[in-house]
Image (cartoon, rainbow, N blue to C red; front, top):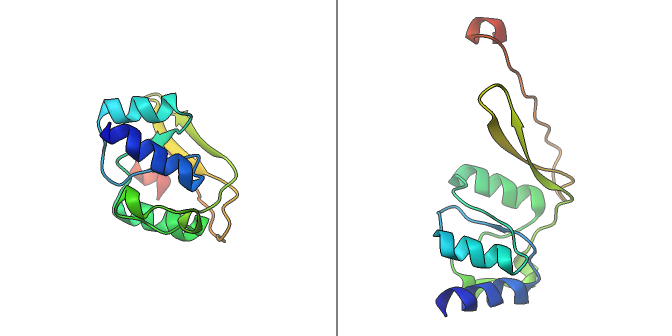
Length: 114
């Protein structure tokens, strides 16, 4: 019941993606996905603030404080895997308020990258 109330609050706000600084358990993640709400968990505090600035969103500490005026906008949110170890990176594109770019540099060792 607790999780279904939270999911209803997220859906009622108009959100179509949830990003959380702290993790939530597998049951909550499953219920979110079942209700058409993909979620990203364990996002660092600094990264969460940068995402909020770029998308024009407000960080809310409780589900009960979530409303449409606190939501941000972005175009595409996708995850890519790269390298032989299949490291993963989340990409958020077409944000409402950003002039930033990411330059991803890879090399065989630190000396090559420098």
